[in-house]
Image 1 (cartoon, rainbow, N blue to C red):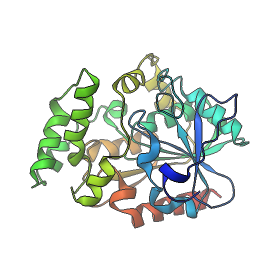
Image 2 (spheres, helix red, strand yellow):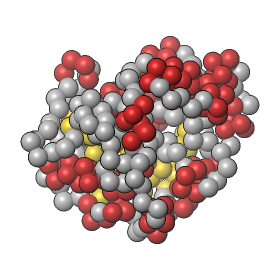
Image 3 (cartoon, rainbow, N blue to C red):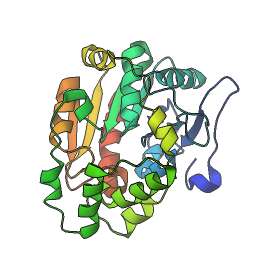
Length: 281
């Protein structure tokens, strides 16, 4: 499938599968499974992932709490079971997983809890301080911004804690300029894709075992790639570097890029992921 999610997407959901799946692209072969972030943001915001699906078959998972799957998350640690169910539905013994942002936690939970079901991990712009304890260095990045929208958005990231759905949506809009390295018409159009839900986002972080962090740190992970943006105000730069080191992962930092590299640096993003998935073939 190629083109607009709104007009020609095909969701695959066998009766036994608790989440929906969407094929992305026209390439044939063994699919990689894509886990979106948010958390629980409807995955239309992934758009065409810089046409990566024309080079490698991709299937996008709709986590619990998104419209196509419904319900709410049982917490990202438990929701790893949904990913295994999706791998089963695709007829795979083990999957290559591409996770974005909050979806990188779910990706790591799957690889930790079910190590024989994951061939590789590509973790794109992962939130990192939760894993390493590294101080966020967003102030240094924000100092390079000159646009009022980006500066105001970063201030909101540091201070705003919405408690209602309306406030949550307003804060999301306010913070959006800071999540990109630039705030041009391209980024503004992308930021408007996909309405998020406060209850679904809060549920994502519930009932996480006290030892989940230690289990992830001690896990024998499959080959792992971390892709960061050196101007990502959400994650910072140094935390992502130390996150990759803690996981024993290969790190690629995209220059001049924020939180959405397939939007901001599509050619570079596609090249990096193409080389990674080709090496796994």
